[in-house]
Image 1 (cartoon, rainbow, N blue to C red):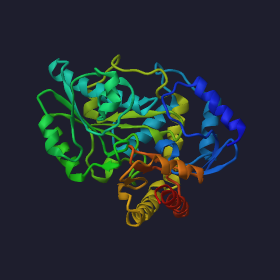
Image 2 (cartoon, rainbow, N blue to C red):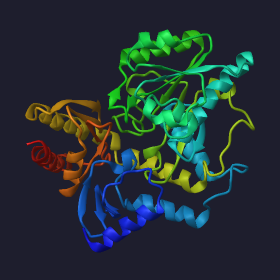
Image 3 (tube, helix red, strand yellow):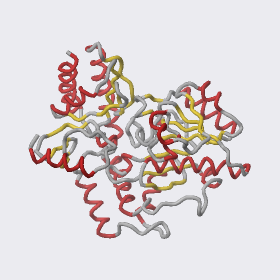
Image 4 (cartoon, rainbow, N blue to C red):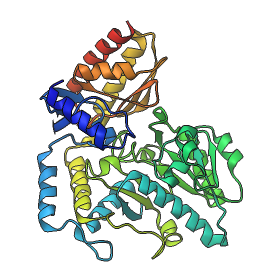
Length: 401
């Protein structure tokens, strides 16, 4: 590391609130599926900003669309209509099959809106404010107080209790545990279609079907968090589409803007007509013209570049190559995941492997202490997977022998 880069790191430690244990590198630019630090070192990126940069870095057409919008209009507030928001909403309706859209600035804000939607929906039925939401153990929905309250990791919540209250926890893919938590006050059942931070656990079709049936029978809202697993990551635009179990409410963010901070929560027409109304919810920046221009261009590029086809082909290849690690190394216990949202489960902590890989020019991230998560740009090729595997194999061998 150069003295200049170390100096920037030292300055950051003096100025930034220490809520992250950052890797010791200052990233300066990106090109395609590669990142470069300020010393010019090249890194193959299998994190993509935590499943954000689906189209890779420095995509010229995407950049040009943002520059064009900056020269027109960046912000107006939601007291007025703007063309990019209207177009983005129409495009989101098309790719999601949902009916109503509320744009946010982040995934956590989208979860907040989904929670409010469920509680308002139930309040309109009986006028009570003691309704409950069932969430899942090991889930992750964000760091704001509402999103944190439905995050199924007690460690994240303990210093900030009490949360919003009336939250019950069940286990993903254990329908009986969900049934056991249902009461007359249950207004929503919330889970990630594929758990990300919790260890790359996809919901099963059987679990999805049973939850959908329960929600239909009890007039409970099925809320799916697609913030990380959505936008093509698993091979369909949204992961629930592979099962055909349409939610009542869903959240989306991350790759929705491919780098521009934007999210959304969406709902069916029925829920939209019987939940949030004028004055119930709002945002200053959500749905601004710049963010919505990004959404429009991202969706266009997904279609034109046939991103889903690439996820299907290269995602299967990635899964197969990662299976080799299970056979080759005793410390690797299993691979799990869908498409380009994959995890390797180790019998020990993986932090040293991730650091070693970075030293060798490969960026990886964990999911929990013992899982390496693979969420690369959705435009990677089989050759990029092969290059990643060479460094991964070397790193595991050097760290664990």
